[in-house]
Length: 270
Image (cartoon, rainbow, N blue to C red; front, side, top):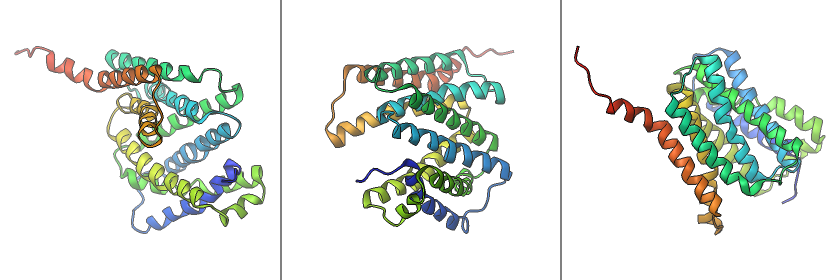
């Protein structure tokens, strides 16, 4: 497939994002301000993907990018403490740190494969993902599917403008020349990743503490390695196996540790 600019790919998908508008006929706008919708659509749909895809275009390995993006776990937890008063337990912090060590173990194979600027851009993308998590938490217990659908109306115009600035008029020509693989990729990003993935993610953030939900994104590289093993016949390295086990244990401590502690406390009768 011909390699096009990453903003051109967004231009391809901008029209498909507009298909979300058709859903607005059936999905009522959630009871949140337009500022929250604008902030969520801008952080997760424009800024995150602009920096991430540009970093990949500049040489950031996709596998390493998926690992660096998971630093949003700890950025999100820090933001939740500062902005939302979210106080994770010591056990949750310990579980998150163990999972981080597992992520570092997996990333050991990628050391030296990224230059500084793409790495920094990926870190910025991860930070904007973290801010979008806080924004969805601010939205509260509203219709999160509707929240994501309506927020998806925000990215098309900024992304088309960026496509014109960075890729020129060919970005618009590319919309009419999409290959089946490119179309499938955009459909997956628009519906599988955005609507289903970020929709479910936002629902969890609306109902649970950030320190409980955020660490689950650390499963992304684990699932990626498992999918590569099943569908592509790739093998695991020892570091990947050890790191994956540490992530699973860390997540188990983060989610179930506080409950087990509460269950083990003796009941006092006054």
